[in-house]
Amino acid sequence: MSAGISAKIIDVHTHLSEHAQDLLIRFAHMNGLRYNLEELTENMRQLGIHQGLLMSPPLSDGSPLPNSDVIKLCERSRGLLKPVVTVEPTTKHVNAAIKTAEENVGQVKAFKIRLGYIEASADDPVFNRLYDFAESHKIPILFHTGDTATRAGDLSRAHPLTLDKVANKRDDLLIVLCHFGNPWFEDAAELIYKHPTVYADMSGLTTGGEYAKQYENWVAKRISEAIYYAGGANKILFGSDYPVTKPSDALSVVKKLQVEEHDKEKILWGNAEKLFGL
Ligand SMILES: [Zn+2]
Image 1 (tube, protein in one colour):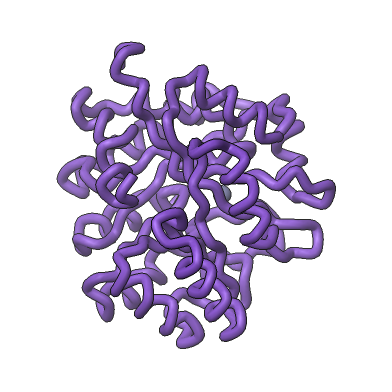
Image 2: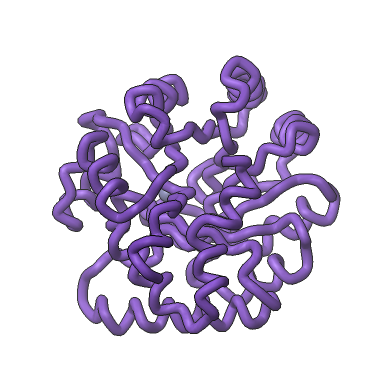
């Protein structure tokens, strides 16, 4: 990747709240990040990240930051960040999320469902109205999949294979497996291969610590193999999960992928541009 072509990068997975009860502050400290809008936008400019999708971080009471706060942060970013609306598993939340998407048409680029953190699975009927809306408006849904940031998370609900039933039933639902189902990369690859509507983002895969370099190499190898299995990189998306992973570290994983340069370009922006209409 030359500096010139990196100017269009899209980060499909960032968090921010500027809220004292934000549970991701712990990760920000680990990464030496100040974790505020100024730092995020400055980071993006320096790295050639031209657009980002912003979603709620979890707060200390377990609830996500209200979507209205995410929309306000996006407004302050002067177009750099676009909102993702987080949807909790109650009829009230589902209806409110749809209303927010309708009121901010063209701005809201995706919905997010926090599998593993909520008391519902992806195929819970409470989400039916949301899925109908998302299908008819071609708005992708980002699903947290894989490892949960807290010990209380429910991995049986966060496993990527829980999305298979949903994808079988809904031909037009655009599904993004966040974190590539980490550590179930092969299972995620099977879903990407099986369903034309299933994508995966590469966010939050590295968080430093012991063996950080070896781990980064291991992850890059596993994602490369998943791309071979899926038969290409057309549905793989770059994401950082700021502040869980530093955007520069997330980019370093993409650079290490053993795939063609044109596939890295698709991962960094081409696929996201098409999927989210950016
Ligand atoms: Zn995240």
